[in-house]
Every structure is written in structure tokens, then in C-alpha cells.
Amino acid sequence: VLSKRSKELRKKKAEIEEKITEYLKINQLPGIKNQSEAIMLKQAKKFEGKSTKAKDADTLSVLQKYVIENPEIVMEELKSCKRGEE
Image (tube, rainbow, N blue to C red):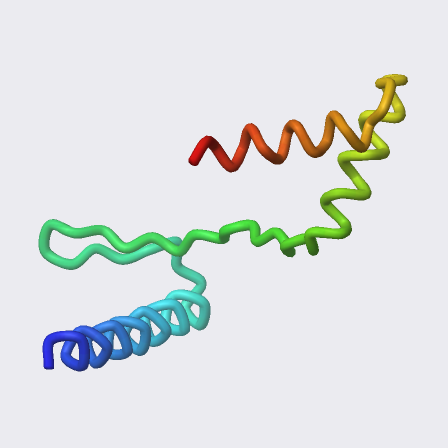
């Protein structure tokens, strides 16, 4: 019941934010102030994610660029360091 209510509230929040954003764009305003809360229009940069194969290929190319011996082994060690210990 609680998760259903949370889902409804998140959906309502998204709708309200969309309406405010649309209003700010139409009226070419940088933001609005409501009581003690300011709402500013902010552009966030979004990066596309890379696939695991692309990440591995990029890592190998960087290691080879710096003339690392056995770049595949070094890459595997780096991956195991990121994962942590069991």
C-alpha cells in the first residue's frame, strides 16, 4: 500500500515539474519563487552509457597507449580491485 502511494506521489511530482518547466520555457523565465522556495530551470548534461565491451576496449587502448605490458592482465586486476573482496 505504501509503495503504491509513493508511486502515485512520484508520478504527480513529475507531472507538476513538467508543467512548471513548460511554463518557464514558454515565458522565458529563469525561475520562479513560491513562498520561501525558489524553482530554477536547470539544464543537466546527460551522458550515454557505454557497454561493457566498449569500456573494456577503451581501457585496453589506454593501457596500450602507455605501453603497459600485458594490458589484459592489468585490466582484469583493475576490475577485481573495483569489485572488492568476498
